[in-house]
Length: 551
Image 1 (tube, rainbow, N blue to C red):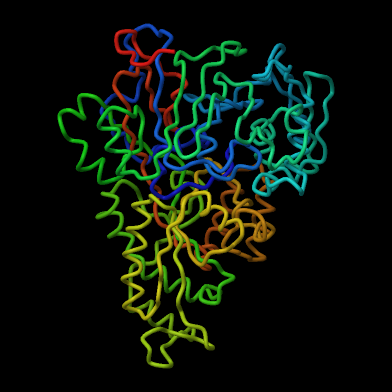
Image 2: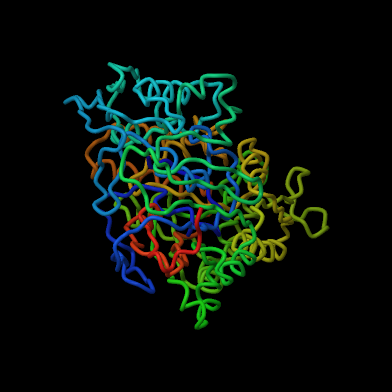
C-alpha cells in the first residue's frame, strides 16, 4: 500500500527497499550503478539455512502496522511478518493476489470483492478469515485508535463486510483512483489478539502475530529485532532461517561493524559510498548497490510559529538553502534537486517548476518586506516584539541532516536569524512531530510512484494527521479531493500540476532532493536482485559452504 512514511533524511537507502509501490509506466532517472548486475546474482540452487544481519538505523516506535507512522516498522513487517490481500509484483509491478486468491471490481468502481485463500493461519495457529479484514478496517476508522495517517486513505469507504469466512467486500461512497491498491493493501491485524484492551497499547505492538513467511522472535530495546522462518507458512517458504535487524543509530559505528562483517546489509552514507568503500577488503566482501526509489527530502516550516506563518518568510529561507552545494559536497551528487511533492520520475511531477536559487540578497529583501528587521540593534531580527529565534529539529544519528542544519545555521547567522540545532532520538522526534511541538525540521517521505497527496497536504490532516507543518489552502484542498475521483490519469496530472504550483508558491516545505539509495550487501548472498523499487531480502539464499549461522 503506497502510503507516505516518515524516514530520516540520511536513511533513505535502507528503509526504501520495497517500501513503496510504483507504476509500470515509470522511466528510470538513471541507470543502476551496481557492483553487480541488476539481474539476479544467483549462481547455485537455493538451499535453506543461515541468517541475514540487517542494519536498522532507527528503532520503530511500534510494530503495529495500523498505528505505525515511520518506515522502520515496515522494514521489519512488510512481506515478512504481516501480509495484505494483494501485492505488487517486484518485477512487473502489476497487482497480484497474496492473501486473497482473486478479486472483482464492479463496473461503477464502488465495490471491491476479495476471495481469500483457504488454509491461511495466523502465526499462533488461529485461522485467518474475512472478519480479521473487517476488524482491521474498523480499527483504522476508530477515532480512539492512533491511525489518522491511515484514516485519510479510507474515508471514502462506506462499508466493509464479511460475505462469508473467505469473502470480504469493500463498498466506496464514491470512486477513488487508488481504491484497489489501498483496500487490497490495507494493513491487517488479528482480531482475536487486538480486540482485547486498548488497541494502541496492545502487547502485539511489541510482539506481532502475522501470517507471513517469518514469525516474530524477540525485540531487545536498543539492540535488535529478530524474526525467524515460519515453518507453517501457507506459501513458498524462504530459505534464510532468521533475519536479525540490528539497531544502530550511529551510522559511523554501523559502518565500522559492517567492515568487520558483523552486518550483512547496511545503508551507506554518501561519503562512505564515494570515499570509504574502495579498499580491496571491502570490495572482496561486499557488493555496492545504488538505485532510485520514490522519495523526497525536505525542510518543513511549522506555519503555526510566528516566524513561518508568512509565505514571504518561508520563500526567503528557501533562498538561503544552497541545494547545489549540499548535493555536490555532502551528497556527492547522489540525487537530484526537487521542487514539488511528487516522485521526480512520475508523470505527476511538474518539471517546469524551477527551484528557487540560492540568493542571500533576495532573501534579505523578502525578510525586510515581511517586516523582520533588527529594530533594537542586538543583531537578531524581530517583528512585533518577537525575536526571530527558533529550533531546528533533527533525528539523532542523521549525519546528513546535521550537516544540512549546520550549513543553514551559518547562513541564518549572517542574516540575523538565530537557529539552534536540536537532536533527539527517533521516538522522541516523531512524538514531537505528532504533537506539533517543533519549529522547523528536516525529514524525508517514502511514497508510491502514483501517490495521493491527501495524507500530507489536506488541511483536514493539519491537527492530527501527517500535515505536520499546518499547510492550509482552500484551492489546494479542492484539487486534492477532485483528483481522488479522477480516473483519467492525464486529467489527474493537470490537477496535480496546479496543486504543485500552489505548494511552490506557498513554500510550506523547502524541497531538497530525491536521494539515490546506496546499500552494501555481503557477497555470500545469492539471488540479490535490484528491482524497480529496491531489493527484497526474503528472496535471498546462501550456498552451504558460505553459511555462517546455524540454529
